[in-house]
Length: 117
Image (cartoon, rainbow, N blue to C red; front, side, top):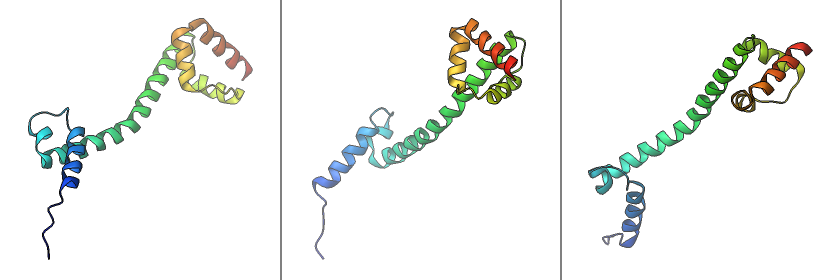
């Protein structure tokens, strides 16, 4: 059977992967075998952390809403329950933004929501 040297295809594949490893340190960016390991690991962490970011931001929004609720003499759980009973279509991201940038508007939302339920 004839020997196959792979030619430019191997170089193209290696260069594509080494380009992904260009920001790494030492042999992790120059040696192909080490670069494969690190790029694979980096892509896996990117995948995982894209999902974790959603959880982290939800926790941040909840803590901001809770702090604003406490300033208006109510609890987070009571406010969210009253909000769901009233059928308001406002999610936690928007509520947290209102709580940070417009405290008076958030106070009005709390008052109207708790008075309806």
